[in-house]
Structure formats: C-alpha cells, structure tokens
Amino acid sequence: MTEKTPSDIIRSNKARSVAFHTLGCKLNFAETSTLKRHFSGRDFSIVPFEQKADVYVINTCSVTMDANRDCRKVVRRAQRQNPEAFIAVTGCYAQLEPDEIAAIEGVDLVVGARDKFDIFSLAGNFEKPDRTIIHRTDVNEAFDFHHAFSANDRTRAFLKVQDGCDYKCSFCTIPLARGKSRSPSVDEIVANARNVIDDGYREIVLTGVNVGDFGSHNGETFLDLLMQLDRLRGLERIRISSIEPNLLSDDIISFAAQSNTVQPHFHIPLQSGSDEILQKMKRRYRTDLYRRRVETIRNVMPHACIGVDVITGHPGESDAHFRTTMDFLKSLPVGYLHVFTYSERPNTTALGMSHHVSPKIRKERTHKLRRISEQKRFDFDSSHLGTIRPVLFEQELEDGRILGWTDNYIRVSMPHDPALVNEIVLCQLDDREPNKAVRGSIAASELSHKASITPRITIQQPVS
Ligand code: SF4
Image (cartoon, rainbow, N blue to C red; front, top):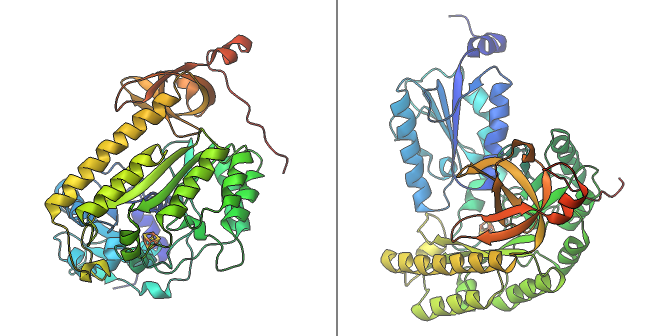
C-alpha cells in the first residue's frame, strides 16, 4: 500500500465535519478556538457539537471530580450522535488520566495537554484505529508556549498570555496537567492583541493559569504587559480574567485606576477566609493581605467589581474554620463569589491530609456561600442603580433583550436593537430583578447630543 502524502490527507479531509466541546476554564476555551482555526484551515467544516460530525474533539478539564464525570458524559453523547465518528480527547484530564479515558468506549485518540496542538499529526487521517491511540508526554518538559485566543462573538476576545504554574496549592492538579509557568514576551502578546483588535474586537480578556506570574522567567512583569497594551491604538477594554492576591501589586492597582482601558474589575482567588486553612492549602498569602488588596482597590476605584474564588470542604476545614470564612466574606466589599466544592484529586497533597470533610457537609457549605454570593451580587448591582456606565453589548439575547457588560462587570439588558451589537454605549442602570441582568436605558446625556438611538461613546485613546 502506498503511503499517503500530506496533500492526499488534506484533499481527503474536504467535506469532513468536526465538532468541539470544551470543559473547564477560559484558557481551555481559548485553546479550543485555536484548534478550530487549525481544523478550518485544513478544509474541515466546523459544526455544533449537537450535530452529527465525522470528528469530535473534546478538550477536558480535571479541576473537580465533576469535570471527569462531565467528560465521560460528553464522550458518550458524541458516540450516540455518530457511532462511526473519530473521537479525540485532549486537555488536563487527558494528561492526568489517559488510561481512564482510553477505557471509555468510542474514544480513538487521547492527547495530553502539552500536545493538544499536535492532534492533526497524531490522528493520521482520522480513520478509526483498531486500538485507542494514547499520546502523552511529560508536562515537566513543557517549555513551549502555544498562542491562543477565543471569543464568544465579535466583541470580547480571551487572549492567552501565560500557561502552567509553579505554585503547589494542596488541592490543585493544574501544575501536574499543564507544567511549569511560562509566557511569551510582551512584544509577542502585543502583536497578538493587534491582530485581535484588527479583527474588530473591542475588549481583550487576559487569560492564563497564573496570569500575574507573566514574565517572571524572562525579566518582564505583568504590569509591563498592561502598560504596553494600554498604549495600543484601537484597544478599548482590557480585562484581567483572574489574578492571585500576592501578585496583584499596589502598582498594578494604581495603574488600573488611572488607565482608560484596564477595566475596574478584579477576580481574585481567596479559597478560604481562615488563615489556618490557607496555610494547609499552601497558599502564598493570608487574609490580612487579601483584605488590604480589596481595600486598596476600593479606595482608588470605589465602583470596581471584585470577584472571589472560594473552596468549601478542604481537608481539615472544621465548622469553626468555615464560620471564619463566612464572616470574612460577609465583611468584604466584593461583588460576587465563585464557589467550588473540594473534591479529591489523585497526586495532590490534600488527598493525603487528615480530617476529610463529608461530601454532605461540603455541599451544605457550598450552598451557604452561594446564597451569600447572590446577596453580594444583588447588593453590588443595586448600589449602581441610577448611575451611568459604559456597556459593551454582545449578540446574546435574554427574553428578547440584548445583553452587555459594564466596565465594572454588571450584566445589563436593553430592548433588542441589532445596531447595539459590539458597541460601547453609555447606559443608565434603571432596575434589577433577582438573578437577572440590570435593565438599562440609553443615558439621557448621550441622547441629548446624538440623533441616533444607538449613541456611541468615544473612548479616549492614547497615542501609540
Ligand atoms: S496558583 Fe495554586 S490553584 Fe492556581 S493554578 Fe497554581 S497551583 Fe493551582
């Protein structure tokens, strides 16, 4: 049999369809988008995951036990849709548990996190093999950085600026799945951002595993990156997806406060409000530092929204520790919480700790914190009613109304008008129902000097 040349392979890919499913974080979504571009550049047509496809690619996460279960469900769904389809599974779960995934019926290729951008060469011509192919290399040898960005529509782009992590938090498998911290140069990210802006995006969300660690291995800093992006002509909004409290320096906060582009929105992982549990978790700060960060932000940007990650039920978390966490969170002037329930993960130090919390109590604690989060969100949004804020509208609709985000991360809805899509509009925030977006209207100050019903604001641009 004659061997197929690359052009044979590309020719036979024509008219094939591929569908993608992503589990987990924004970084995974950014990387799936880049994979999609790889496939469409090779004449595959991209179809929604709910449709029958020739190839299914599943980009997994392993942060929680649920993520593993979710992955198994998604593989089965793909198989139901087309039992003949070639199914490739990649991402963190594939890196950590390749044999577990290979054992799921229908999976043809398992590719570890480090090699996800090599799916094309590893899959041959996407013919179903007799036995599942497993390809996984040691993440400790992952020194390369793959650029990636994703977008929900043509409004906000999630730009990958960093990968991996050098920390050793007790509960976390990410360093095991993604390897050491690494990032490209400021210049490379600025060039990528330039392309994203030229494609029409108004907002860039800086994404990574430990974004604040950007540049730590090449003598640059995350602040250097922010300062260069801030000067980029045409970039109207920069949002930081999440940043560790020990890396969110006062200099970054003051720069954000005076920048026209860095949005007044910080997502800062806390994980526990008890210093004893933070120590067990091997986190690199204590609650006093966390509180100081929040207060500094509030002092210079009283309107900023602050989001908090928190984990319930880490081993050793007693009722008293949990009460301390609840009290700490209640006392913080923050806008919302992202609450995660601790789950046992292989090869983590938390797994070997004593005093594991029962799943029932973990769930109850999660429920309590989610109630606090709802109240915080309601209070934050309500405190801005009657004020005017710039809103970037997206294509998404809810009950026939168009949705957008303010600079300080309030979800706003307006009567649908297609001309609003991808526009930044000054809106008055009128009212809010629980668990709904705030209802907005075009600000009177805008209407008074613009004839159009879709006025735009001009964001001041520094000269670059
Ligand atoms: S900082 Fe901690 S929780 Fe975050 S990715 Fe690194 S090890 Fe995991």
